[in-house]
Amino acid sequence: MTDNRAAKYLWDARRAAERIARFTSGRTCDDYLGDEMLRSAVERQFEIIGEAFTGLRRVDSSLAATIPDLPRIVAFRNVLIHGYATVDSRLVWGIVEGKLAGLLALLTRMLSDEA
Image (cartoon, rainbow, N blue to C red):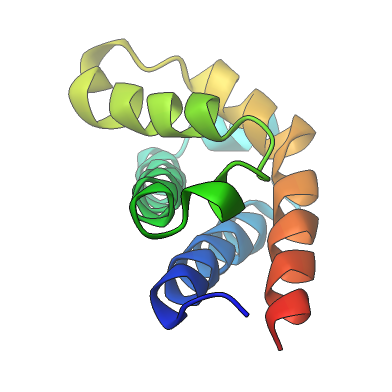
């Protein structure tokens, strides 16, 4: 059984991923590019995922190591926060379309394994 702090980080990441999925449901890349509030909301949730994974690494590095691409996810969070002026919105949308569903499924499995 994972420590409660690790489970909390997983839960925070899953909740943020669910929000992104909800915010972008039925939307297109053009919708995303044309809506600064949507872009801001999605980027914020990706920041939360990256921060949650940073915390997870601190409290349970072996569990964190089971998340594919965790270092890239944390690096993406750093770009969103520190490199905000150079964020490529098409790249962010590509992650929404290509990676989010898999991450959400993984987090859901990890949390159900903890139950």
